[in-house]
Image (cartoon, rainbow, N blue to C red; front, side, top):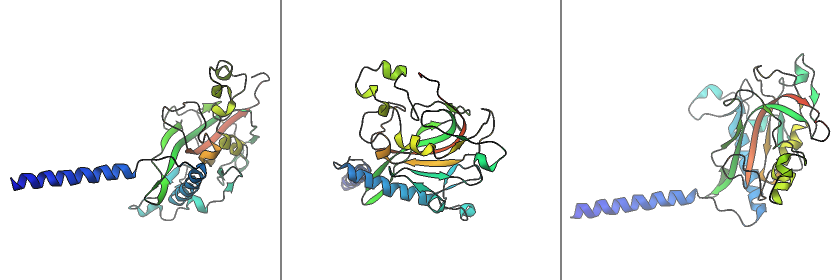
Length: 250
């Protein structure tokens, strides 16, 4: 009988511990959005300290067990620029149109773009005083997905004449901000586009990190992924294969 009691007690303690672990990782939205903004800043700094770019420009996490990446340069130590919105961008040296025998094209704020990318959304969470991104959720990944560039993504630009806006049934969905990630649009214009065919191999030219305040923050947004994007920051790892002016009236 004593053994049975001890088993029940041990099981109860284990269950309580598991419940506590679950509770510790549960996200509670800060009432003050400035607190979330601070979480974003801390999580982005930690992310930049724990990741590097491989030979093709892919973001990779440093390994705690494999020494082969010990000589890689942390993102935080690579040249980068922080915009007033808090968006950070990295123009990768040796991977721009100016560095190869291909002319570069300026990227306009309303252009139609073809872009090869890996992107994830992240929620910055404070767990017992440790602020970090939770596991990222795929936002758009053409490298491991379709393997061809995405064309004219709405999160870069959407016209107020687009059917999604014209036929919208809510006031929120009639706004460009419902679809566009402001920080991404802003930072991508700091790059130049290549003139590459869709089947050509990629060599990612940069990284853009958008804190939630320069994305959707707590505003209504288009359901791109089926996962919540509220308070989410975004990391884009990309190469712009081509760009074209948007025809008038589109």
